[in-house]
Image (cartoon, rainbow, N blue to C red):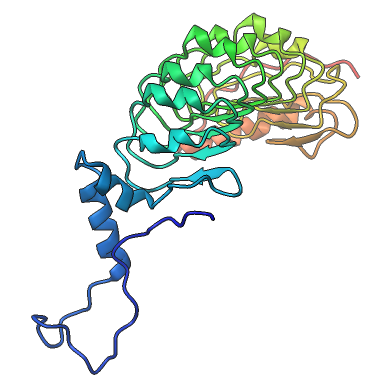
Length: 313
């Protein structure tokens, strides 16, 4: 029997002719859902298992779908009794207030998907690195500045989300995840990528939007197996040719101060300035576009930018 999660405090609709005892006539009704959220937020601070059970539901039996979803439950502590579900495959803890996990989580050796995004983690709990069956790990929207070397133990990891953290460089340990197919590292403070990234020959999609890249990462030019490259919202001024990346299907380079578009092979979709042109904008048109953009921003005509080098047809 699958346990039901208690949402807490929500009552059914009341007759418009009835007034609850003690409420002033004409006063706006209190939303049951709103009151339930308040109760859950208060109870999460109380270090009592009974209160936590009220927040997260009964959860005394293994769910039939081998999944537990405790997202958005205002949790400050992980309910340890969940660790008794040894066959659990999916565990969603997104959008809570967690900053640690108990060592008992290591009992969940069948876990394949773990979502810890939108929490308060400043460091990845070491116990996560013991879950060797993990395929998908969501760590986005936390306060991570680095990842532990022990992450390399997760050799089954296919998808890693670390977007919207405090990373100033991509941790080298990511380059040891040999089966990684998708890497989401947007909205950090990355300025470059490690050259060892090229060893991830299973990597197909890399998302780097909203970082501090001033140059197109050179290592990506040596990764012909990439299918999707997203460098939207960076500070890249020049794009080298990507025409040799034989597997490339999509490149997103919008919102960069670039004065050329990346040259790509036939059939590759580009999203960004001059994307409709093939293979890249004519230099004079590129200069006119940049000049007009600067005039709009500064309100006066700036000095003409230096001419772009002639491109070979």
